[in-house]
Length: 339
Image (tube, rainbow, N blue to C red; front, side, top):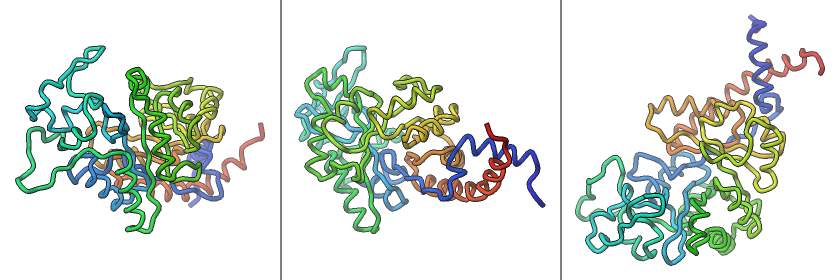
C-alpha cells in the first residue's frame, strides 16, 4: 500500500525542515559526551570520561575554567561547593568568598592547581556521602589530562576520540587577569591540535571570546546558544549567517533547537554545522532518547548528552527514520511545483 497524500505532504514538509532528508547520503552525527557519562560516579572525572568512550562517544566535552595560577581545568563552572568536598576541608574555610553580583562559595580562581588537586569530586545528588576508606578519590582534571584520556581511548577502541572544550565565563576571567583564550590556544598548540582537521571543537557562549580565540588558533569553533546566550537573531537566516564570521558551527540547547525548526536549515545554508546540546534537567531515559532522535532527524550534525549510550541508540533510530523517509521526501519534492 502506497503512502497517503497526507503522509507525502508531511514528508515534503520534513524535507524542507531538514535538507539532510533529500541528501543522497547521510553523514553520521557525532556523539559528544557532556562531562562524560553518568553512572560511574560524578561527571567530569576520569572515570566518567572513560565510560563515555566505552559507551560510544566521539568527543569528550568539558567546560574550562582557570585556577589562581592560570591553569585550565575541566569543571562545570567556577563554583566548587556542589561538586567537590571543599566545604569539608578546614584549611579552606577562609577561602569562602562573595563575588560581585552576590554569588557565594568557593571558586576555582581562588585556588592554585595544586590545591584543587587535593579536592575530591562528588556526585551532587549524593552530597555528604564520602568515598570508602582505601578508594582512590576522583580529582579535578586539567585540559591536558582530558586530552590524554581521549588519546588513550582512541588507542583502546581504534576510533578517533576528540575533545570539545567550552570556555566558561571568559569575560569574567579576562577581567581578573586570567584570560582563557590565550591559555587555551597555547595548550591546543602544545598538544598538536592547532588545525581545522584536528579532533577538537572549541565552543563558547560569548561570541567575543570565540573571535579572540580564532585570532590565535585554527581549531574549529562552535557558538553555543541558549536562553540568554544568543548572539544573533535565531529567527533570521541572515542572523544565523553572521555566525560564520567567527565560528564553523552553532551549538543550540535542546529547547532552542526544537522550538526553532528553521535553525538547522539556516545554519546548513550558511555552511555551519549544528551540534545540539541535550537538556540536563532530570527526566526518564526514554524521553532523553526521543529528544535526541528528534534533534538528529531535525538536522543536527551532532548531539551532546551525558548519556552517550542513549545518544548512540538515538542516532541509529534517527538514521533509520531518515532512510525510510528519504525516498518519499524526494518524491514529494519532485512533485512540488517549481517556485
